[in-house]
Length: 309
Image (cartoon, rainbow, N blue to C red; front, side, top):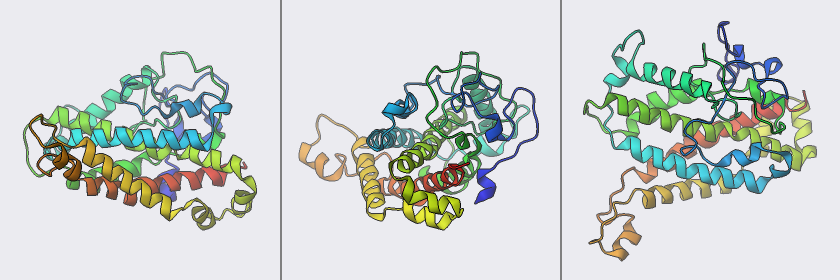
C-alpha cells in the first residue's frame, strides 16, 4: 500500500514536488503557500461543510469531525445519483481528445488548473488527481492557524482512489451504454471523485483528534511503527456497520422518485413509489464498506506513523 501513499512526481515549474513534508502548504505552516499547494474555494456549494475543523484548534473535536463525516455522506450520495443518470459512456475514457489521452483526462486537468488558481487545494483534504504543473493560487493564504501535523502534506492516495473508481466502482454504478454525453459524464465523474477523495483524506482530522484525545493509546504503536497495531486501534466494526446502514438508507431516501400521486406509505416502505432507486443503495453501502472506510483508515495510519516526527 505504501506506494500509493508517498507519490513522487517529476520536478515541474510552479508545483509542490512530491508533496513532501519539508515543503508543506500554508495550511500546515504559517508561510506563504507554495505554488501548486492544495486549495478549495471554487464549488463551495458542492463541498461537504466539514471545513469547520480546519479553522482553529478550539473547533477540532471528535463530535465536530463526526458531524463533518456524516455531512459528507449526503454529498457523496447525491453525486452518485447524478452520475448514475448517465450510462457508462466508455469513449469518455478511452478516446483521445485534443492532446490528452481522453476527454476525461482533459476535463479533469483543465478543471483542476482553474480550481488551483481559485484556491481549492489549500485545504488539506482537497487534493488534485493530476497535480503536475498546477498553477499557483491567486488568493491570499488563509489566516487560520494550522491544526494538523505537517505530515498531512505528504499523504496522498488519490492515485489509488482514481484507479479504484474507474476500474472497479464505475462499472458497477453506471449501466452499459453510450448516450454521447461525454463532457457531462466526465464532469459528473470528477464531482464524485472529489467528494470521495475529500471524505477519505478527512482521515487526517480523524487521526489528529483521536491522537489528542488519547495519546497514551497511540504513542507505543507509533514509536514501534506498528501499522497493524494502529489499524486495530482505529477499527470499530460496530460503528462501520452503522455507517454502511446509514448511507444505504440515505441512498434509498435521496434516490426516490417523488410523485404527488404516489402513496405516502408506499414511499416510506420502499424508498420510492415504484420500489426503485436512482442509485443502488446496496452499492453505496458497498462503496463505504470496501473502499471509503478502509482507505480512510489507511490515511489515518499513515498520518499517525508520522505524528511524532
